[in-house]
Image (tube, rainbow, N blue to C red; front, top):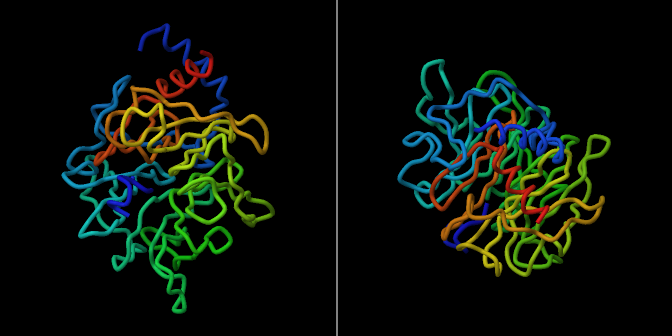
Length: 315
């Protein structure tokens, strides 16, 4: 996640019938997690066509709150918050009656900034951290790390994803169903300040990152990718484009072939505001679309995400 420049260094019956068509067109059979669950616990009230703050007082607070990731059982979620000049991770769990007060997960090293949690198909949790790779690492940057679950509340030692990381910042991860890992990076050789990349997963290993190209990446900062369905659509955040509604907007692109994406299109005013939109996320059952808007986490019925993308694509 990168937001606000460098300040924080992120139904009617007719509609129902249309949504069935949209889901068919978009091929949204598996979510960006690479797995699907139907047991997700959602709070009330729940949004429809207009986005709402997500869990005010628990997730959405009076400070910067951003991104979230539901756990595989659908009963916990992890999110980021700005605290004492750093990004820190929190987790809250539904106990059957209410959502517990958020606490730091055991693997969160509070000496460093850590954010952007997401779960992979095997249950491993990936996140970004400014912690050094080892005792010899003197470069001050964000890398992608992961931890694997051991048992209830316990995790493995944090592992640096060295095959993906560079000597520059890496941010925000999204998984395709087959394991391909999408992320943003400020590494050299890109089109702008920060570009979108994919590391393809093959034979149990991640390959060298591949830039998604100039149809998606701009001369500015393109970040926070969300891969939708079987790598058919990409949603991401980008500031300063000519069609922007504000500081940074959410955009989408359609895959044309294995190595090419369509030109990015603005998601529109249902999602974008005069402020900063970032950190897109689709719930593991595909029912709700989450994103961050300036200091808040918001959510909306995902039917309207697919509807708006389809309408804009067919203009």
